[in-house]
Amino acid sequence: KSGFVSIVGRPNVGKSTLLNHIVGQKIAIMSNKPQTTRNKITAVYTTEQGQVIFLDTPGIHKPKSKLGDYMVAVAENTLNEVDLVLFVIDATEKRGPGDDYIIERLKQVKTPVFLVINKIDKVHPEELLPIIDEYRKLYEFKQIIPISALEGNNTGPLIQAIFDEM
Ligand code: GDP
Ligand code: MG
Image 1: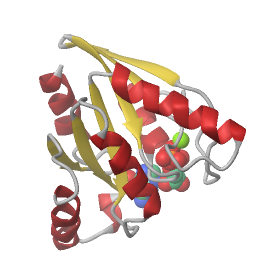
Image 2: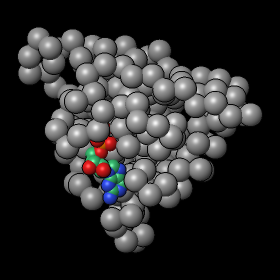
Image 3: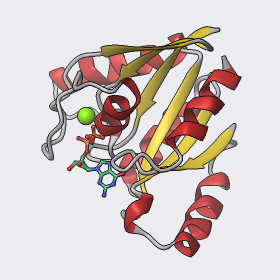
Image 4: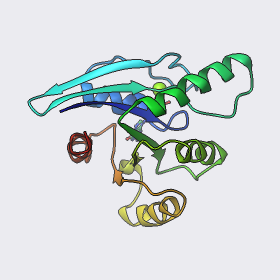
């Protein structure tokens, strides 16, 4: 099995942390400042099950500049080219215009999307249900998977679900 997976989400939700956790090496730049990831950075995860090629996509957002326009175009093209999209959200942050904008973009592509609810190490389990309810009303996610990219909670099942989708 092999395929391409794009990781999208607002700045600071933990996209680079997830990518680094999966491939086990620092290949994406991590920072609290938005948009330190300026290019499509590809990471290859290989096991006996096959190969997954990850794209750490720059944040999809309403363009504010020419550079912003270009970055959004790169990100949106990526969504059409991949086999699966991981839409990462931060369990500790309220849904915002940035999330809604991404959901609108996701509705325009046919690629299956997993909702990855990250940073569950910082919330109580019962706080997850309202988040799941809120998001599943907005988009028909193929799967909804809560994780902690930092601590590695539930990342094994996420990786398995990714392979199952390939
Ligand atoms: P990106 O902008 O989406 O790529 O986000 P980063 O991967 O750069 O992470 C932004 C910040 O959130 C960093 O300080 C990370 O250490 C932190 N972070 C990422 N994942 C988790 C997590 O699962 N739990 C906690 N507590 N912090 C996280
Ligand atoms: Mg990043």
